[in-house]
Amino acid sequence: MAKILEGLRPFQKAELIIMMLLAFAIPFSWLAAQYCEVALLLCAVLKLVFDQKFKMNEAQLKLKWAYIIFALTWFIYLIGMIHTDNQAEGWDQVSKKLGFLIFPVIFIISDMSYMNRNRLKAIGYALVFSCILFFMINLVHAVYDVIFNGATSERFFDQELMQLFYVHHSYLSMYTGLGLMFCFLEIFGESSRKVKIINVIAYILLVVFTILIRSRAGLLCMVLLFIIQWIWLTFIMKKKKIGYIVGGVFVFMVVGTCIAFPQSVARITSTIKNLTSEHSSDHRLVQFKGYKAVMEDNWLFGVGTGDRSDETMASYYRYKAGIVEKISPEMAEYIDIVMADKYYEPSNYMRKDVMRKAAEVGYDPEVVGSNLVEYQFIRYAIDNEINAHNMFFETIISVGVIGLLLLLAYFVIPLVLWIKTKHVDLLYFSFLFMMGFNMIFESVFEVQKGIIFFCFFNALLFTLSFRVKRSEIEESHSEKV
Image (cartoon, rainbow, N blue to C red; front, side, top):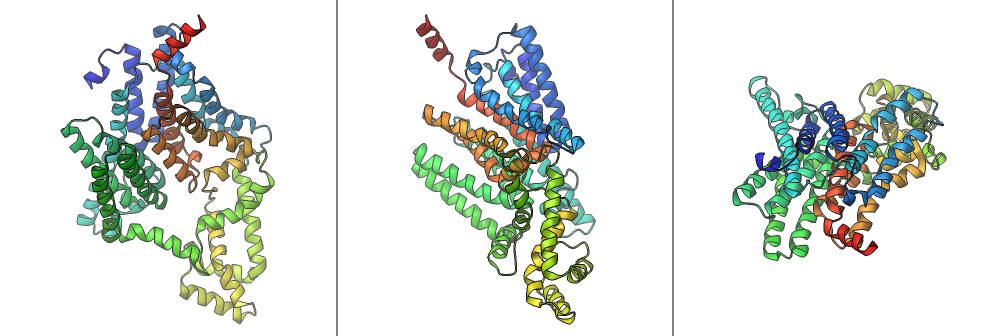
């Protein structure tokens, strides 16, 4: 720690420590992370006034156009208030998404020239340590419940594992995904043997944690990150012998997971089975059918920042009404009674029972049976006020195609700059890949757990990846003279 802070001025030290605390706080408490966000902004302003004397880093100013585009994401939600009926929800959304404005401002005004790879590593280690600590605390508590309170083995999986500190498994898998890539780079980077061993242990723990929390998107994303790591090691770094060994280890890990943790893999296989079966489906697919109409009707400007939830729910109700019209109100009422607060896919026994009842009261059993799953899942979406579960579609519904273009800019701008510089930052690339992949399955920016994580690490990694070198600035000045 002393070496990392060595040579830094007081405001620089404070800024780095706050960033480490922010990274550490993310898995445990979004509120604590938000306090760190405010502290980081305050520190950046004070640093600009008293330390930098209102002079900003020219290397970062070269990228001001990108920071401005990033910040426009917040402004589009603010503009969306113009045609919003639900003002209370709208202002809640605007305040919730302040991270899209705050972090670009911080990384424009604060001179980050002191931020090198070693100091980035300190922030990365803070996140990795926090994820592992989060895992171990909850794991110890689960072991205690199994031994002394008679809990079953399910206590180690999914949301049951996180009874002390609850975070939705989709977000935890994003945190562990970035931690995995960080540890991987440390293992195969210029680190000491001791550091490599520590990171191997941390990598294994993060893999086990990801498996136990059983996020479908998280598990698939982890496998894809394995593939990215193997390609980078084997073909980019051209360490083919090590690459083949690592590839074998990855295959062993995937196969071992399928054998040792069938419960985790079953979530993925059951989804595939449901999507390919005649009378099955996935709740996200049914929800998409439910809100598809409102997205298509409002694709240009969206329904307004505060009306997204109301309009989505109204669309769900309309979709449900269409199903009720097919199966009849009487059968819909019977399903509500039989299933009560059960929202899972009906078993074959339940399906036969509902179809038998339909035949008794004079309705087509096949029509009722073929619509049973969709009725169940749309009822679940309504009763639990489920959002779109897709950040790209969620954005279109809220603020239209302009908002979607601004969201896509987070991925397109780095890609263009990488093509221009002919150099790809693997850590940043993996981070963007992981976030984009998870946005297909989750409305990541509807909660602070996703907003702060993305906005902070995106601004940090973008700055370090594309910051212009001092020599290039001096060369540019000499050409102007």
